[in-house]
Image: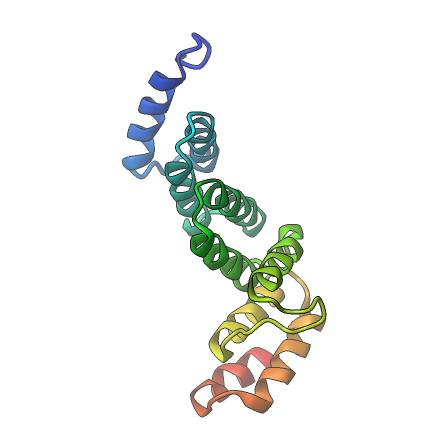
Length: 169
């Protein structure tokens, strides 16, 4: 009702209270996006970024929703001047939601920030590459997941050999 009455500060306060309670409603991500949007319109980029981060890490949020939340977090962090936080979130996007359409932009951002050429591989750890491969499989890209696992197998530390074998099948 606060938004309909054109009271964004009251709407923001009400949604903040709901969000802090850890709402488990079907539309919890929607309320989170709404709250983050209100933070953005108020110029509170840090609160917006944190809200988007919390949406992305929820266990019940589908991969495409998490990807949108992460991209919005990147934009909010950049608006707040938090370049390091934006880079860390872009890295998470590449690892955790590799098939999302926003991942290509996240890769381009990481390459630009680190001075890598468009064809240079990102500097991911073996554990991050394994998690990325698992994300590719989860999102239905078994071909690229297998390529990632095959490349990883050559250089991976011994402690990752069994997880790599299990993911390769």
